[in-house]
Length: 145
Length: 145
DNA sequence: CTTTAATCAGACAATAAAATCCGATTATAA
DNA sequence: TTATAATCGGATTTTATTGTCTGATTAAAG
Image (cartoon, rainbow over all chains, first blue to last red; front, top):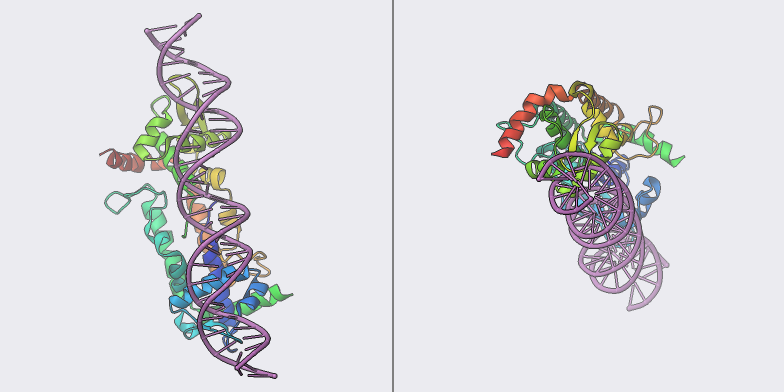
């Protein structure tokens, strides 16, 4: 199967977009995220815990605890979440899997793929959570119905 | 981890590019492909077997058997190999993993990602094996040293 | 202070992907 | 016609990813 982001990363992106859409409220508990986004509760907890370590998410323990963004939505870029969860391998490794692919010894797809990959990287770097908030609200609204 | 193509698909692309580079000779045995490209022999055999079923590869059984391209290199596009091994999910599924992502109910990244994905698809559709042969020969030459 | 409800932490289980093993079949060539 | 060397096919093992369970810790609220 061809994958772009791991399940972990997909879930992490979904959850953090949800947190951005609920940025007005205090914290959101993992139970709610799990239910709305249809992600196993324990799994999304783990992911948000790791994003807490990365400094992207704030977690409040104990009763009435939950998760929220650790920074203003305009300070969090999609690339921050992707690299925190999946690392940079997608942007560094050869698309054909050649171990020693480099500008000196490029693989047959080096230039073409490099260009596309740079565009993907720039896209994820340009998009911040505040810019996606409206679209996310619409999408979540649809999920709730 | 973030992946583009599965290991199977990477290996398959490497091997078929190798076959294209050796299109003058009769057949190439999996032993040789395994050695040059550093892919487990049994694994690349399996992959080439499945590509044989897909009609992209020709296999000659018995002593002095091996694998070769089933068509002229200019008739095989990279997308053919990718879809034969990994399917089309990469080009159909929502990048954020939302189950019901569609033009009607787009995910927050729908348009931006769609554009990139189309470019990737077109690139894989445009590139045929004959076009990549020279570049492959250089790369293989480097691997052999 | 005690109950309650949440995160946290680490082990564990299930599934999927990657890699290996082995015997059967096939065809070449001595 | 027999030995050899390759693919073929299926089962099996290993490893990584995904998902689950359980108990500890934390903090709010009665």
